[in-house]
Length: 298
Image 1: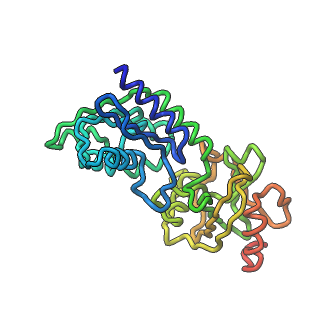
Image 2: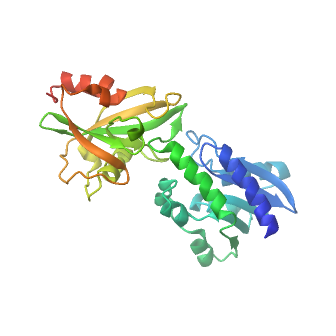
Image 3: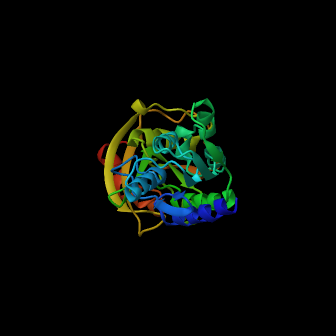
């Protein structure tokens, strides 16, 4: 167990350095043969820390057989990574945070799409795996939570731009705007929306963000969202970060009561002529000019 802690602590340090809060270390015969921090997966969706570490280990040893090695992961491997571990001949897996725990703590919520416990896969496999979970869980989870706080309302990074979506709802010439827990620090209203998760299309992200933020069992179909604008500008939360905003307008009215929730502190129907200083630059500089041109706000 002492060695497990030692190597997991190394993996956690790697997680602090990555684009995403994950780190992996592979050990064989008491020697670290590979380590990997999370990089930009924009052009390689398979570039998880587990697969990157396996590639490095195979290259170092000149073989694709890593039998006898132990892999240390700060988070429970997804099914893709578990497959890579299997094909590399690794049978000893140690991880810190389970997917279930990560989702429960609202960190890295895109895991919901791939929440298949590896213990379950291991039980039905003819191959015996030795799986140890919960090693340095608290420390690894703290890294994940801190990453989530920094990246709330942000999304996947492509070509140094954070991908985000915003959705406009119009009712009687008024625009629905919201003040998230994050934007409340600056007293600014934005469109309903947020970051794009890995593997999502912009329309999928827009639909998910709308239903999460409006809540109250509101549902909307992707076909009810029409993309109208795309532009790049500094992020509201941090001007040193550049965003690529994909803006949609909803064909469906909000048919539920708008109430503050864990995502949104306040909703408001904004009317032209009100003080635009309370609005984000994305609304002021991009949506309102478009809305005036198309005569949908008055």
